Length: 311
Ligand code: AFP
Image (cartoon, rainbow, N blue to C red):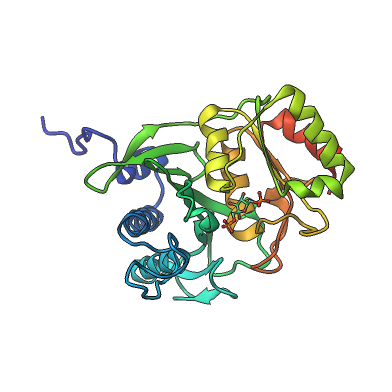
């Protein structure tokens, strides 16, 4: 008998979305298009000199920065997709309308960690998807999907549509294939990843949390949120912070593009998120460039740190 749905040799992202996540075709197509954008961004990272040499190539010609190029790549796929009502990204000041009657709006940071490009550290892209055309006034709890792509020695994509967190690796023919299903985060962590560290001078609670971790945890910090939170998901434990101080009163990271999608992914994996007072998933979006303190990772560590640090 011929099976209606033959099992592929390696489970592709498309297959996983269809048979494991069971999402509507329109959402599946959108996530697959975002993975295509990531594949193209990965190609630009490898093929261009963007960001490596201060904006000029070896001929002294001005180069488009990689973050701008990456933004244009994602925008191209979003406009082509057909199910995108609106989007906003770190590279745009406002929400951009595409087809207001369409099903989804997409928030994204096309290239997180762009200041690390010249150092050749790992960098990433972050995506969140809401139903409908409206982004302002929502909370990240209303996300229906989130994903990130980590461009390191290998290119990895991690996604959730509310049914666990799953990791894929880009193969040599440009397809994301399944690496690990149902990534989980234990209640207690062994690693810490402290961003906006100068805030310890302004915030005794952050200094106290840091002193605790220095004697109980191991430091793992790269300066790229995607890489640092991926470390937590892959090791199955840890805590990441970027909290407010004198320079950045609400921390350095953006609620819409960075904190919201990662809070969704970590909570999906059994971890917790906090802005010091409540789950990041409950923080209302009032502006696209809104920053939020973030404490995210192993639930017990997050709870203790939120008590120490506060909002
Ligand atoms: P860039 O995109 O400007 O390199 O910033 C990266 C980032 O937004 C995020 O990925 C890091 O977690 C955070 O900044 C690093 O913040 P600190 O400089 O406070 O460590």
